[in-house]
Length: 400
Image (cartoon, rainbow, N blue to C red; front, side):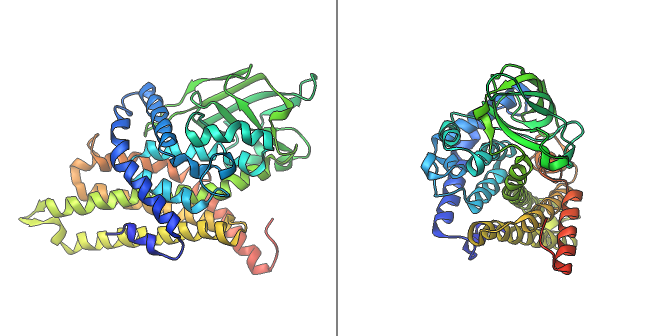
């Protein structure tokens, strides 16, 4: 069975293996009581995510999202640790993976580009689970095309503050987060070069986060509306015009972790498929004895290991080589999410009619895996990124 034996690969240290055991223990014992009726309705989903964040914080597991100086686990945020966490949690619960991931996505921009005061104000609460973060990039007409962002940030005429106007949508933790990393157009240059990033508190005047979006796999998701939303000058993240740089540096790290979440879902689907193939009988024989079944399981197992290699290659490269990993992280997310979709689909097929009955594990996985091919770079956009990189390498030019 594809599983923890991959932790013996040279990508990992003993510290990573210990972290994997800690997250696995949490997923097995502490997590199940927290899930409750998390899929019952959106109120239950929001409450469930809040419980999970608090529990992860109390267990010390959110410390991998933050540097040690601010209550974290290591000198810097380690990509392999994030990937191990997401793989392990996603194998158990999509909501648990989501709750963890947003603590990182909503704080890493501050870790990478924040001032000392910003880091001290935000990061300790992320690490102990008392503060919930969010990342607000997408808009109704600006998802994959970040340069199309229309939300504006203009000087408010009172000191060095800013006024934000516009709409963000498809925002995870909308209405739940204590603060949002918001990207807006400040106009230093056209397109991508005219964007800046801001830390916006949930209670900022002029911010409405009440609109929720109901999707196939329960998830705290919604729309943020900024109407003359006033933000103090010290809430600007980095320098004016650095918004695109901040967003891409964050996605460079987190695209690999999306691949890791897909890997966790695929591993759980494989477990369910093997168990069903052993117990289900067709034409008087166990389904597992048919060559067609074994061939399907072989394809699933191979896809899982190939995904793991790409995910942890990207994470190791970022941690150890300390270079840009746009190509590696894009490959990891593209392959792992597309493969996980196929693995889950195969598991549903092996389960037969029960595979589409609400409440079975493979039915839940089928709903949970789908969004991973869309957020933080659709598969099609990642193909463009990888293809453009291949052409640059062939021509000997430097990355843009």
